[in-house]
Image 1 (cartoon, chains in turn blue, yellow):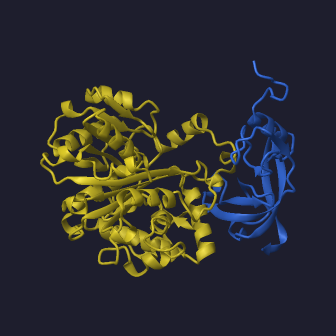
Image 2 (tube, helix red, strand yellow):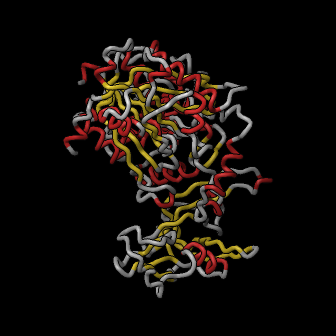
Image 3 (cartoon, one colour):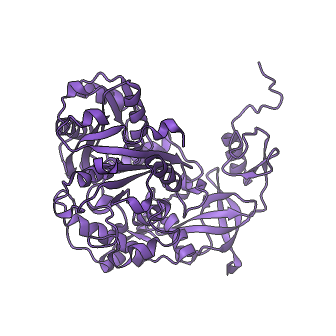
Length: 133
Length: 392
């Protein structure tokens, strides 16, 4: 049996999503290569290390790519889907929630917030003043 | 590039190809479409099912697909490859099959696919729902992207932002594909299509309209790969595999390092190196055009133009009949056929062009062709360089 002192009893996805459901948005940081990681992994995709910690990001970022999913009104209406680059250097899919979908532009500066609904947390972003960078 | 890999250049040839039920084939299952295409490809090669001792196949729905295919066709293959990389799979099956042929593990490999996704009772929506459980993407699915279209729409948005590409430029790709389809009796959509038609079509996931998206059709496709030596004794003009390489950089669009550069830049470089050819040496090009943005990205990543210049390249009918490069001469996934995974159909069209079987759409004197497959959401890329005996 290997030393399990530092081995968590649950996988990273369950731990990460449990924090999200409690209203906390966390990303990973690798102690060996110094890079941030998202989505969370068991092993650093940059250097193979297991020395990964869940850390709180600053929460600010920029819209990297954008689309409007066209849906009928009874299916929820048009929906923004964006890829957001956080200043820590990681990218995630999300939604810019405080603008009409056709107003979300690449380069828009955004700030993360967690919305918990029916016990499930979701990371959304709000546009910051100043428009596109 | 290792010497042993280079020594495989031209070692195998495609001796038979066939399609079956392309467009609408109500009443047929995936397997039945596959079996009909397989039988016809084997016959086209001048062989019988009993000669087949290698099998490559993949299915969108069934994870253990080679087994029912072996059972249905009554095969006893010594070589089996069920690698599933999405739509690029059947092009990615080439190099391992060449290695199997070179080692003597087998002597005739059947590569085959069938899908009844347009007419079938098990709909695409049901497959998408099942996949949420079998292949979860918990960091994308909650945002409700309309996959796969939204992934390609995100890539298109980035290309427009960085290089000034417009929706009109994307429409050029759809219009060129339709013009080729009008010359192909097998193509599913052959009505006239204008730039304005594409721009005014129903939006799906901005900046892509429904005419920027591939068809949803039924269809089966198959080909037979044998050693170059054996191919010369078979009835059809051999089409030699000069190079093949595959690259995967990510599964999810949110994990793609740069949405304007695909793994085709790697698979293309390696396939050209194996073939000893460059983009300028290629006579006819078949690219997996699941969405109009694909064609721009792959023209750039495969070296037909510089990064960011795809829009210039396709403008004013650049890739349409009579343009400066014949691209997607069957009408592509946009206008010819797209039964879930299109890669095998791109390869079959390349073979038909090199055989001179292109009819009204034949590219005169073509001796080299490139067929490129894409899978997932710009996730897997596989490039094949093919040639006639003149290109050996």
